[in-house]
Image (cartoon, rainbow, N blue to C red; front, side, top):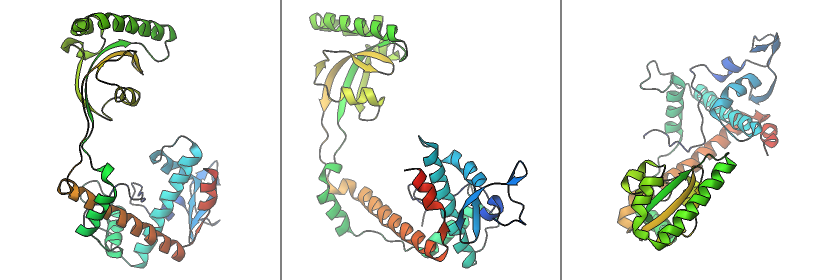
Length: 297
């Protein structure tokens, strides 16, 4: 079985040291991480293992979020998962790898071994794949494409006067092009502040997601021909000419069967991992995580 899919809800911090050694045990005689001579506060436990706030703070750098409460909750959850798996590997007396290939740590190798031993590798049948294909036809189409030329009138997002000037200039160019559309390449060469200006403003064929989100959303709503208004983006204002539109077409089952099989296998494995973690939480009680997650809501 290959490496774990990245979207599985398991995070392993890059360390060969077990969580108890990093976080310290919550007992007066232990020498855990200190702050001004005092033990780091601790409200999170997996069985008898304490995971203190210092360990959570170190882990937060790997879990960026809009709010620190969410980052803290994600970090705490990741450390709990890692400790659950470590405790189970210890219970089963799985060996610690003496040599590790690539960038994996010995802890990651041991957890991989635990999951391979504990989870069944289930491959979906062709019938399952065909059923999913028939129930979700909208997901299996080739991408819509659009062929675009543009003239960029650049202005920083925080330059109000510059943005107004760029928009006004774009409107002037649109009016001129409505009268003389053959001048687009010449006007692009003389006015556009995009490298494409040397190629008549040509951006070529684009699919959704290939440009900045705000530009992408607007151009895929346009009809063929010159847009009658300036298109705004973080870079400034664009005079846009759509040369061609190409709608996606339905794909045959044979073209996507491997993709569907991989997706369904991943979904089943993800559910199995979640169930396995719930079983581990029954064996190794977790205290304090619900309160941390509640603060992030």
